[in-house]
Length: 217
Ligand code: SAM
Image 1: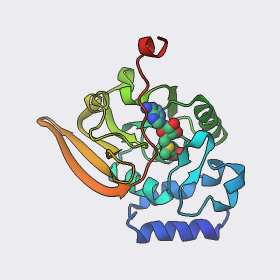
Image 2: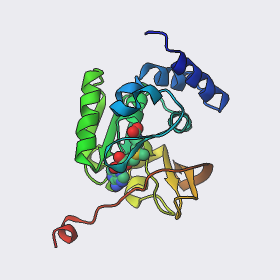
Image 3: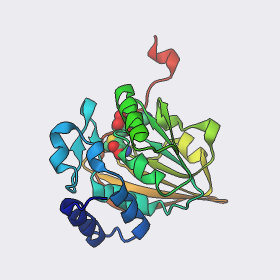
Image 4: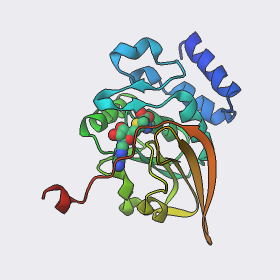
């Protein structure tokens, strides 16, 4: 790996800001973020900032990726569902830390580009799906971990909580107003869901597609 002072500075900043899990830091170090950002932002790939990608979407801020990945408490055996593939960067980071990532994106051009990046990087443990991630991926459930990288309403989608394994963790930004979102962690116990509000964030909205019959009416 070539020495990149911007990358080193970013990793030190992430550690200073609370990303202390060395496996998470190593995963961020290994995934070339410059491959996930548009040409025009290449020189900013290792800045700690969200950047625009196509179709009005964003690649998340590295600190948010680091903190959310850390808050998932991943194990190499885990099956992880991500909702909101976007550039594919978060999925690529997750893939370094778990057995398989299932990632869903509703915008086809973004998903196709992300798939090309996974191929180019030789990552074969990410499975993709085009569609509405609020419905989850029932055929692959239950998931040990679910990560939503777009902001939902006041409560997480029921299909996602239903597809969370007992002992599993769901992480999702929630809030009714885009200026007032929080990452919320839900743990599924035998008795139900335990909610824990973590830190404030600002994500693009989680959009729920209407059912097919309504859409074609
Ligand atoms: N994880 C991404 C990355 O690493 O680049 C960043 C995700 S971006 C902030 C949010 C993404 O969620 C967008 O690409 C958007 O199209 C997608 N999205 C929003 N609602 C969705 C839904 N219901 N199902 C699937 N994807 C959705």
